Image (cartoon, rainbow, N blue to C red; front, side):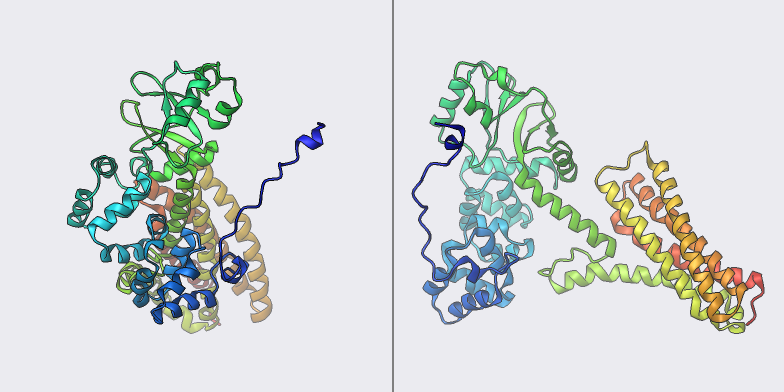
Length: 478
């Protein structure tokens, strides 16, 4: 057989297709989202008390799509849809649901039902369902679980929230160093308690400390007689059990990990984290930073209205205070503005462009902090870099606005004043946009939460102060 023939896949019989009234295309649009007409069809079947029809429509869906279907259903109809679908809404669907929607469903389930669902999941997914429950309800669910499952959940709940201990799963494969490849393969075949998904085998010493890792592909392609220690990779990334999940995600990204061992304070292997868990964390953390920058709270469309109100109104009130500071500065120069009405027309331009410049720098800095690109060794260099960028931007915008105002108003002095004010405010915005997040981070405050308030206050106030102050100093009277 030549090389071309060897590479041809064997002619396996076709995989049986699920019986379905419509194709995948009839349920999903080009962006892989459930079509509105499909969602309506399921809702109509439920409204008509045709649970069999609803189940027939939904049964071909992936658990993640069933979760989407429930989330797309109006709040007042969700309980009826879930009841009609029955056991199609299983543990995997529950783990895929939006937090707020999942909480709604959990409230309608008995502790015994929740315990059964949690027992079907990996530890990390089960913890995600149970951790936010009220203490009494949480205890009722734990009491209804099997002792082994309960012990794993209680152990996970003992770690801080959003830590590796909460994120990890306890089901893993660990072998001693004296085994050879053949013994490891036999162990895997004979062990019926293996995790559902794993890609690496951890090699541990007598104290259960990881000393290496071996990918499944290596095990399957090596002769049986070779010792596992001869094919394992000794260098590995170990995750402390109390490490913050955001830092865990950064390590996975930096070292391109598929999975990683989690160790306790004594260095013993206590769990593993896999890449699929990290994908959720990356999405969650990125979304949180964006929403915090805008002061939009959790920013979830399923969040109760009152919670959204509470999360947003405090930042709007804070913005009101900063606006009052800016208006006070305008009031100081009321006489100058009365003498030359053009100043009132132009001063929002200075403040607005400065605010945008500050937002650009702030976004870059917050992202760099979140991805660990900024450390104590390059903080000052980062600020200096943003100052130089601001100087170039400021000089360009100042030249354009200066020439434009001179031509429109026929007043070279006014053009020079607004050009100088624009340059001053954009440079100030660059310094503030970099320095404020770095300062907040230095004092262990979340730079994504409060940076925008301070940057807005500084750029607005400095914009009005620079423009009106220079106009007064230049003696512009109209």
